[in-house]
Image: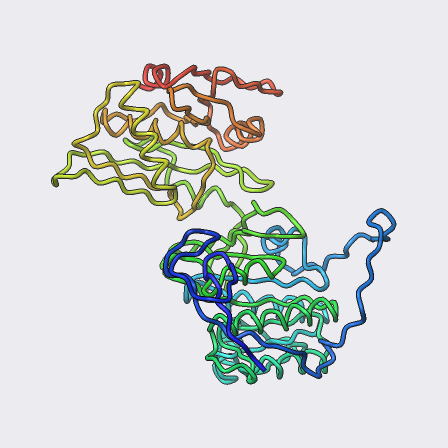
Length: 445
């Protein structure tokens, strides 16, 4: 039996009537009708024992044992490995490598003697077999099930009792008792809820592959991400051989970690020297500066590229790749106010090399340095790194984990390090301390 309700596809807000604007997140046109399943099925997954409340301090807990995936980068993103009962959602653009990584994960665990159930609702068994031959997936511990029925998938999981289950993809499966097409709000919510119960009841980790929208977010209601334990996103240009796997939600680890992979003819392989991705060359170029960001437990040297040129149109263009658009607008306003560099008739383009995206405020100083270099048509000092946040009044502020950033820069041979005048370093690092962007301008021109 099913009745209708309405959900916001952006935030998951639920209401019993349709409205044009979501009362929770103020988004327009995001309220969609959904059929909600009423009652329980006769399956064993739904036959749970009654819950009993207990005092929190008296609950006995033990350290969760993690299952290594066989790949160091994937383990890092997951927080050290896979935990029993973990429900993971992995999203990314079509063709970026989601299914490839899942098939390789099945092989890595299969080699260790772990049984893996790979279910596909989009590809036939012949297609998957052809891909497995190309990727040299040969483990006999991998079981394949091609089905679009959620109940059949859960029944197969109960029957086979694998160490890991993979569902490719969540948008392609459906529950027959719901009168809606696969990929609809109701099918996504109910199918995910069934798989969540299956994972928690059986203590079985489940990976779900998800489609993404044109904005790059997992397709379907936002509540889908709230239900799962971990959400992973693939980043990177489609034609770029390097891919970045980022954890945006993780109940069992850090949400700041990223994994770096290279797409080869044998699938995705870990990148041994991540800094080589984000740096194009060692020579100083006009409009190019070097910064250092922190992602999780690791620091990365990144190259900031800037191009400032006279506009050919009435309105100057502001184009940013890898950063927030508003960040550039703020930095340009700071530049105009403090250095009297008027950019109202100039197009400004900013790009982070290597396809990485970052919101680290420590890049402020390197962005301004790159813009000044492009405007003055002069390269920055050789072997220089700029690490600092810039305030609205033009002051340069210190950033977190500065010692780690400076140490990473020194390790790669960068000798001229520019930081905030108020920065405190624990190590014996020789750096150039800058009070504000006027001091920055004087130091690099």
